[in-house]
Image 1 (cartoon, rainbow, N blue to C red):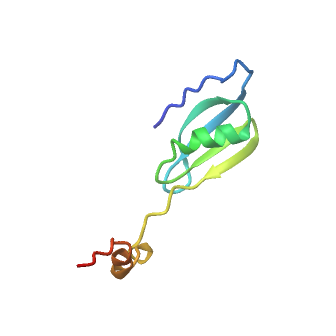
Image 2: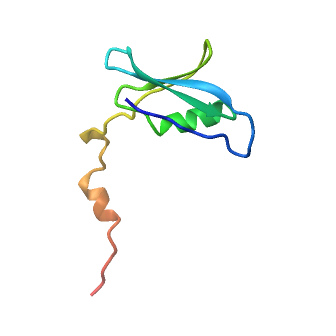
Length: 93
């Protein structure tokens, strides 16, 4: 469960959004209200709260975005050992 409490910046009137935290089967686990000046700001704020299963952002009955969790890094994504050596400083005797 998470809480988002965001105040409008610049004294403007923010739009109301709802962020839903998703469970492992895509079910809604919890939700929080969010006030933002525009869709992009609501997405940026919600991205700070993404869990391992993802989030949905809604404004009324309009789905604004689905934020997927970051993919775990696998061994295949790691650079080979020799490439790390290429970044080492060269020492000349």
